[in-house]
Image (cartoon, rainbow, N blue to C red; front, side, top):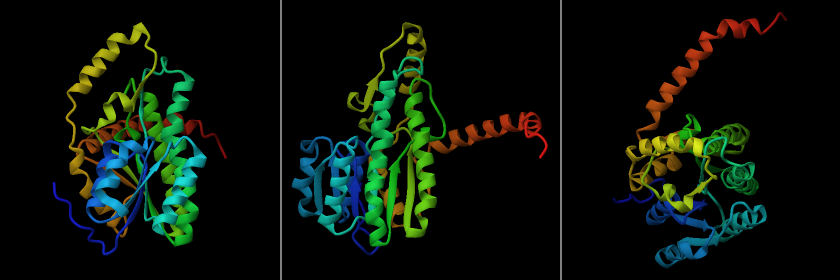
Length: 283
């Protein structure tokens, strides 16, 4: 697909984590194609070396493991010094843990949170003083439609996205007065490498869940997946907007599911409202 040039009138500088594959790679490539500058990071520098060959001085490639806070701080500061500013800080690194609630160990869950939550926090906390000093910026985070609804077998992944949503919502209120904007990107199912072995970790399996998981996997196979290369224009509209949304559904599949989930929640709360009210007691 063709990408429009940056129509917002100025070249934007991006800092993006997880650019070796998936959305991170698609968005970094598209931003560079439209003439923006990008600090692209990945755990292995070799996986993003081709960006350097293709885009020269417009790209700064940095090796970054987001689970190492000192490395994160150095990378963010290096990118800021190199380009003179950072307009968009995009947390995209993450992976999914496959396993039922009973199967996954606390260590498995902690390791995933280290990347999905604490990694993103390290980037945000490193970037905020710089964004404040320069008078603004835009923090974007790749969440998921599963930040509002859940699925079995990847419940811990869903939980990391629920936490991600809450953190960004609080952040948005806290940094608004500094001219810093926050947007949570919520993709539905896309044909990225997210489902590949590199982006999934598997908890040790218990036999009792074998049939349940097999049915779940079969259902997943029939899910229609969006085209990741159709997404950059939507991301550009958000970063170029005067008033970007706090939350943005990427793709057409999330909203019907979210509508149904919230309708069900409201119905349940309302059905139990009299019991809830009794529990208030007298002032």
